[in-house]
Each structure stands twice: as structure tokens, then as C-alpha cells.
Image (cartoon, rainbow, N blue to C red; front, side):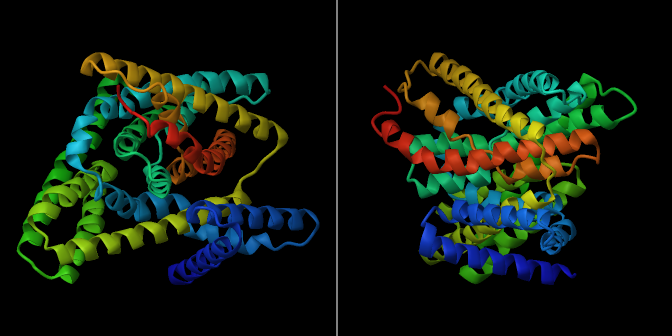
Length: 416
């Protein structure tokens, strides 16, 4: 089956699910599409157990598509650019301490809390995998997914200060999480131990290199857009910036996500103010909003369909439920640490509602599943994939649908 045929099938399914959700479920589009995909996947699995083998077709599509490659090397750059394009740098700078802590120390601390706790729980359940692999799970599940977070916050009209803090964190912490993930996977699968020096070099190469490349890409994009007054050409330039820039980052072994986020922030701020006409701004925003919404729907449909190729048993299900609780507690601890530290540094006092809101708004999404799928085949991978899926589905469906109930409290005052 060709990539065009696979794409046509997935887009058609996404459109059909979106229509059903719009007419009947009336949930946020991405969540509704994913829930319908989950229901359909579950029905296919039940029919298979009854001897009606219909899910092989869907399984073939997912295997040929390679979800991990499709997200990490295809969709992610466009989704990150669309999100960064609408982040105000002045607002982000005001939240720099909190965002920096959450996206660095927060991810690192959460990785170890989740890794240690998950290893203990799995041992109690009689599921024995190496400790390094539970740390790998901690690394892939700790970063909040910018795709899921930005989509939910946008739909629920979150307060500006809160949206900037959460969106800023989620746009940057996946780069840190991927670096930690890669280092731990190398330890888990390599024939030699990775030293602190090597991990530090990997971080510098990925994060610092990605930042420098992103600044360069943003500057080049700004210079080109400034010299054109045709929104069609300017939109095409942004498309080239994302696709070409992400590919260049990968070939240089830099962090593509960080590079695209930095470039998106530059185009969305300096470029928007100094290089675009009002007509271009309106058309550019509409174009990238459409790209964002379409890719989000496709992504969440794929997440729902992945249930077909994941092996579950009762122990894995219990482990998954435990992982949900562990992940939330780890995020609560690191969010509390970050907020309290920010209060001391900035000499301010946040509203008491801010910690539970930021904790609950820390959604996990497709990036976590893609990282889990990228692991080498082993029994450890099967366990990690199953519990990752549980955490992601709970995060998007339960947290995503209920976050609106917490937001009105935060509307009173975010700082005192």
C-alpha cells in the first residue's frame, strides 16, 4: 500500500469521525475523534476474539505508516510551529523562571520519581523489567505534549498568563525529555556505559545546537518575508522553513523541535510586527490554524487506532492505572517545586489554585507514544507501550475534558 493510499484512508477516517463527533458527541474535535477511534478499535478487537478477523486491515495500515516516524519526523515540526507562532515573547519572558524550571528540572526530577515508583509497582505485580527501562518510561512520559496542551487550552479559553506558562513549558520540555530519553536508551541497549560527559555533550549538541539553528532559521525567514508583500509566497516560505529546517536539524543531529519552536517564536513576534502586512497576518494565521486542526485530528485518530496493535493483559492494565497515579503525583511534586521556587525568586505569591491547574493541564499525547514505539523490540517495550498508552488516553480524555472545570477558579487571580 502506497503512502498516498494510507494518507487518503487516514484522512477519510478522520473526516468521518469528526463529522460523527460534531453531529452527535459534540466533544472537543480532537478528543471526540480519538474517542470514536478507541471505540471502533475496541469493537474490532472484540470481533477478532469472536473469530471475525476485521482488524488485520487496520493493523496493516498502522504498521506500514510507522506512527513513530510519521509523528516525530513528519507532523511534529508543523504542529510545533503552529503553536509557537501565537506565543507572545513578552508574555513568555515574564514567565521565564517558571517555564525554565518546569521544562528542565521538572522533567529531570519527574523522570526519576516515575522511574523509581514504576519499578517498585511493576515488581509488586510480578512484572520484571530492568530498572533502566522504567527510567526510560519516566523520560518519555514526563514531558507534557505541546500538541495536546495547546489544543485543549485554546478550546477552553484559558487565562493568558496560565496559557503562556503551560504552553511555553510544553513547547520546550519535549526537547529536554527527548535528550534524556535518548541517553537512557543508549545506556539500556548499548554495550558500554554512557558517561556524564557524553550525556552533557548530547544535551549541548541537541538543545544548544537546536536553539542556535532556530535563531538562524528565524532570522533567514524574517529577512525573506520582509522583502515580499504577497501572502501566498510568505506562507510558502513558512512551510519551507518548517520542513527544510526540521530536516536540516536532524541531519546536523540538533533538536528539530527546539529549532522549530525558536524559529516559530521569531516569525510569530518579530516577523509578525515588522515584516507582514495585515492581510498577510490574517491569511497566515488562518492557514496555520487549519494545518494545526487537521493534523491534530489525524494524530488523535491514530492514537485511538494504536490500541489495535498494543498487547494488553490484566497485569499491564493494573500497571497502567498505577502509572497514571504515579505520573500525576510526580508532576504535582515538580510543579509545586517550580512554583514555590518561582515565588521566592520573583518575590510574588501565586493564587493557591495555580498548582492543581498546572498539574492537571500537563497532558501527555502522541509524542510519548511515538517515543515508546521507537524502542527496540523486547518484553520491556511491550510493558512500556501498554502503560504509556493508558497514561496518554487518561490524560487526553479525562484531564482534557475536565480541565475546563478548574480554569474558572484560575480566572480570579493568578498572582496576588
